[in-house]
Structure formats: C-alpha cells, structure tokens
Length: 52
Image: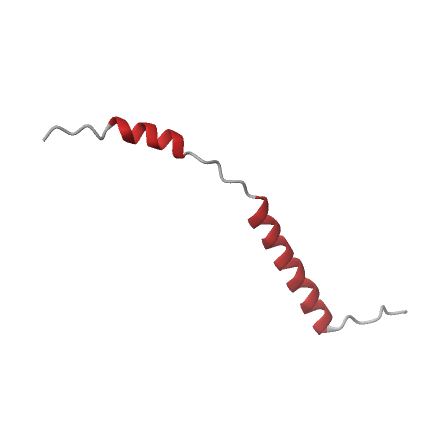
C-alpha cells in the first residue's frame, strides 16, 4: 500500500505553534471593550455628597 510522506515533527511543531499564536492574537485584538466610565462616573457622583 502506498504511504504518504511522513511529516517532519519540527514542521508540525512550528505549524501548530504559529496557529496557536495567530489564534491568540486574533482573540486579543478582536475583543472590543465597551467603555462604561460615563455610567459609573454618574452613579459615583450621586453618592459623593456626604454630610459628616
């Protein structure tokens, strides 16, 4: 039976390492953080009027 050419272990390691790094970069840079500072500042300013 014919056999496919064996894959080099170093090539497989490099390929999966690059895929892992690319996947992590895509997940890191495609994640958009919604800024909620305006909401928290408005709520926080309501409670700053302490009468001691």
